[in-house]
Length: 326
Ligand SMILES: Cc1cc2nc3c(=O)[nH]c(=O)nc-3n(C[C@H](O)[C@H](O)[C@H](O)COP(=O)(O)O)c2cc1C
Image (cartoon, rainbow, N blue to C red):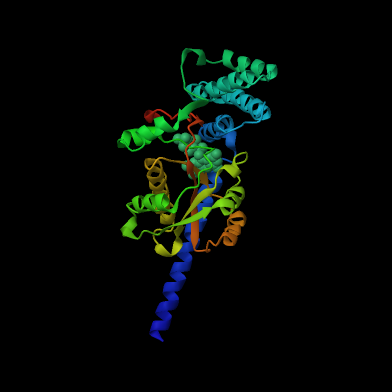
């Protein structure tokens, strides 16, 4: 009887703890999620603008971008940037450099393909006149890369490995062998994890099954058929205790990053693809053989490099913007 009561008390404590965690998560999400009151908050506005900017360079980094693609997106982006400039230009105008530079690359790129976009050029010029952008030089858009160049750097030293990795959006048709994937998986297994639990899983999909998974993911519109090998990294919720309910995402994320770098070090191309979706969409993962107790962390699209290809520059912020010394 005593044991029974003790078990009931313990269970009630656990249930209340889980409910509290969910409640706090709800509280922070409604307050800080970027979809909520976006433009009332400079950080939310900046992050969403960076996201929209990246969509433009990503479009240019595909195998065969549709001629004249992205005009509506770019117009909308320019209008939002104008709004940003009015609201926050006095606080942080340097934020505008990366979007402005990307739009400049987009205009040059689109004109080169023989498509004229005078309305966008005019709107861009209006925005430009209100900034000091012309005094700076920010790399943006796409760069041409080659297999020879990447493979000379990817396994040279750590710095070269990091600087030579890019997200690739098209690959050679050569199938990726199990042997090379096994080698990468062995390297990624060196990932540290909380109390060495190694709660991650790597689900490997090949051929049409990979394309189906990529279609489900949805963030690869325009290049789904390119990805004939996809690794879905998950983390097992059963590995974690009541005081570490978010740990699965940390350990899984560390593993996924190591796997990306391991694949790159072996000369393969990769692209990380988000799986941070709403639960209705995640429920469909059951049909791919993913049990409910595994939370998806990331899909890694994998392929062999072509001799030459384009990659998005995806310029990085200065470390002063992301480092806080205490
Ligand atoms: C969690 C995560 C999710 C991503 N999802 C997508 C995606 O859905 N579609 C896509 O084209 N790229 C996606 N990417 C790739 C990013 O756009 C890319 O990593 C970023 O622009 C930096 O560029 P780099 O990887 O070439 O350094 C994702 C990257 C990460 C880390």
